Amino acid sequence: MKKLLAISIALAAGLSVCACGTNNGTGSEADLSAQTAETTVSEAAETTAAAETTSAADNAETAQTVEIATAEELVAFAKSVTDGSIGGAAGKTVLLTADIDCKDVEWTPIGTMDLEDMSNYSCMFQGIFDGQGHTISNVTFDSDYPVCGVGIIGMNLGEVKNLTAENIRIHCTDTYSMAIGGVVGYNMGEIHNVKLTGENEIAGVNATGGITGGSTNHVYDCSVDGTTIQVLGDNDFPDGRIIQCDVAECGGLIIGGSFGGTMENCTAKGKIIAEGNEPVGLGGIAGCLEMMDSVTNCTADVEIISAKGGHAIGGLCGYSGTHSVGDIALATEGVQTHEYPGIIKNCAVTVKMNVPGATHVGGLIGTGLYYYGEETAFKIVDCTVNGEIAGAVTPGAVAGRAEHSVIESCNASVTLNGAALTDEIGKTDTMYESSDQSDEDESAEEKPAA
Image (cartoon, rainbow, N blue to C red):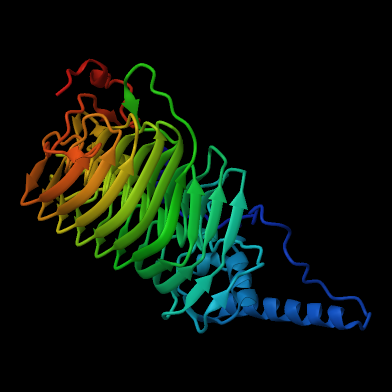
């Protein structure tokens, strides 16, 4: 998550107008130059397809409303955003006018991060993407090189709504990749009324989610079904301190990792799998919902498997909470909170966990995060948990660790290794620490366990 926060700072620093290279690793761009004079049927078909693609790109550049009805038009629009040629589609409304099947399409996400100039907005999507109830299906993207923001839409600074995605497969395996989502890679705008259905497999190292990989803003009225999130990579905490990392971190069915924003009325059903050593931040709705004022009316039916330990694992989210100083992250991450503790209200979880050796495990929430001098706190109200936990170390039926937090009117029916788990809050005695501490703050090393 700390990489995503650094990106947030860079994006907030200013607006650049330089163009971005596509550099998407999915193959070379179609050659739109004039065709040779041969008159074979196949060459005529290629010429027609190229003309249609050019027309779609030209339309995207000049029109305020862009209508897209075919895979060819969608790919052309994606490339025109990603290469910076239409200024991120700022001020434009994109309307899907038909269902689009992307089978056998070399996919380019709509919008990307310019890793050489992270304040370059021109290659990030900044408009309104309105699916109008239509479906984009069979998108496939594989990458073994560093990427930030991969999905149908890679980087969203605008609004994504009224869209269904189906049968999405995205695998990003490089250690430095982040923000990998089935629909949106990295959300700094709004996402609402978006569904992920069918059979979906989203795999990434840092911030991997079904609707969006990373988020710093609002996500609401979204649903996920038939989805497997794979959290890749290995961690090692040999000295006993568990510190936020950028590998094997943050996997959730709706959001991978969020810092700031709000979340309402989201529903998720699926599976989260981490096969590496000591992953951190796994949850049914999200791996991380840190510095988020409110999470309300959300439900999850999730199976979580972490084969080799892990930390901050919960049926709703892995870690969450707000800081008592609302603007503690304003200068560094551009996030200000207004609720302390952060509100988690009217949420319901059915969870099955197989997490041998894992700590900071709760039926609903794993833990808060030690961040600039204190552990972030949450207030859980009117929530329900039904579940089975196997293998965890001192978990809680509601929360694995809950320093300074409040639990009110919650109903939990959870078993641990087949027996009733009666502890509402677990007995984990080690803090889960942010890596974003100042160099002077070494108190976490010496702070006695609560």
